Length: 201
Image (cartoon, rainbow, N blue to C red):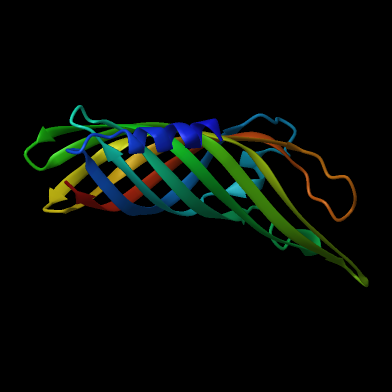
């Protein structure tokens, strides 16, 4: 919550001549590393999948500013359908960022950001083995941190471009009964994103 409050202060304190922006991104999330080595970690259980996000922020004349972002990733579970197991999983992230932008060519803006916030993991599972079946569903809120950067091309008040990002997240929730699901890992991903922004000066 402190990071969200900090970004709100940055946005509110931006000078009258600041550039504000709002936009959307989409691309692919690629699992890179995790904290577990016993085949129960993030990279063992999750494959690459799509990612969608929205964000809004503002930067001052120095190029420094703040941004709030939210994104959603439907999780591609590697063992889907194996042994009668069906899983539906999603990850939502809400982050507050410090942003820096610099015009490096007449129509090209380079951007960098670092943000922190929350990582919300949700999963539901159904296991069917012969005449036996069971269901489990759970949600956990963990921590999130992300570094990212890229470049956007100016088309008047609209900018299009791409970004690379390194999202980190952590959960330490253990299932308490048969209806719960364990979320216990620290994850690192690579995001390849394409974006469009509307800029107001």
